[in-house]
Image (tube, rainbow, N blue to C red; front, top):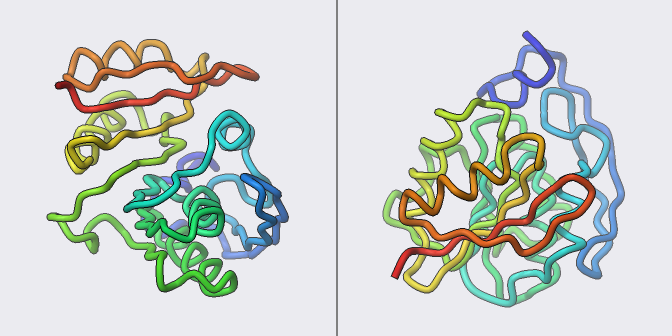
Length: 201
């Protein structure tokens, strides 16, 4: 199994070793534990860094952190905006564990819940979805993932995603529009696109 594949398995087989990372994003300083078998161990990946630099945090409402990894996007949102409540979702059980531990360490468990998809209320809706989506799971799986979660957006909601240009950001933008999810480019930096998706009128 390749290192990339570990990120998308429910229970990675590599030994679980935690590694701390310190980041300053959206005006808040975070010290988080990352871990082996979880995306971006020991670092803030370059795509998520672009996402933070090119956006402002959600101001309020229910936010879904889709493919949360160790939790950096949703935790930054919860700390930057006291009126935000976050549901963080990942298929990787280690990622969910780390996200929960990080939320507890930061004192935001009242507004932050991390879970595997099966444990998320199927009737829940969200004002915003934030994601550095797992492009490497393959186009078909990615399309299935997005079409499963985008319909959970509230009527005036939006999704904000960062996708590498060389990983198909522009074709993904077109495809989303064709599926009835008009998508615009908010920013382009360091080989990444920041995309905003809304429900078709």
